[in-house]
Image (cartoon, rainbow, N blue to C red):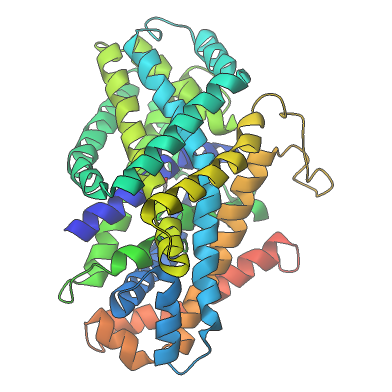
Length: 447
Ligand code: PHE
């Protein structure tokens, strides 16, 4: 149960509520969602099982864990680089993640002070634009979020977050259902449902397929060291398969409900589905402004969004801190100070991407990347390039390097259908589909 709570606390965050809807909007809806769901089921579940089994078998931090398992399998300890890559990726994600957490935090006060009541969609979009335009305020919020994350990791109060998840998850589900109910009554509900669930493959691009794959890793906190780190605490008798399925289900339900709460509003008010990162901040406040007790529910929603994001932010920082402490023999306090200090510096270009540097497009020479800001690029490269590559390495490691006796023993379900399917997915389906998606993206393979 503790692992389920911690893993769900890490998985359910901005990825499900903020990112899933906006990338669904940018990538044309249904077909993208279908590819995403396939990735979650056939890549996400087996990779999560692999990470938990690695953590439980080695019972160490994600970097040395890989080394120990490589040794056990008689392979080179250079595999530890794979662990390092995961941690580095989650650390870089943290630097922009705190920025968006800051938006959610700012919106608690906006909702609470009744700013949405009766506000027109134009006013709501305008207000959000004004927040993004003000780099000082954005930087202040993101710095505060980083400090809070650092303080929590320093104090080792993650237990509190686990407990918060017990309240958060049911609360989040109730409020999302309420929003979906509101959309059924007042929004362009069927249009929203069709957008999310009716696949139109003519809208699916190579980049969309890569984004769906990358997002499966991102939203489930995979390939970033987190699940290996948490796996180290899983008791020997727990079923890794059932727990992984439970975590993935919780995350997916929250994502789909977010989509169903947002797109009916988008169509009702003639907003742009591909509006990008600002999407939920431009749509949900309209519903909160119009529904009965909207100020109350709106405030509650942004509090929960903030708590969900905060839980994930902690899991993004923790592996780096744990590794600094163990590898460089730093005190926990020092490790947090260094990690947070550097993350703060790295976070600045992301914050400026929404205002002063919104015209800076460092990859403008690459087709399809003309409009991408520094924030967009960091998000794109971490989620869609680094996480899938780490995932590919994990599959190779667990299914080709580790002995099958070791993985079978650790998954603890004998040689039955589930184990054999897992091994087949990890040996062939996961690596080949990741490679195929990359080849498709660069145009070598087309599907
Ligand atoms: N899964 C988190 C979310 O969806 C983000 C995350 C990614 C957390 C990788 C930890 C590791 O918001």
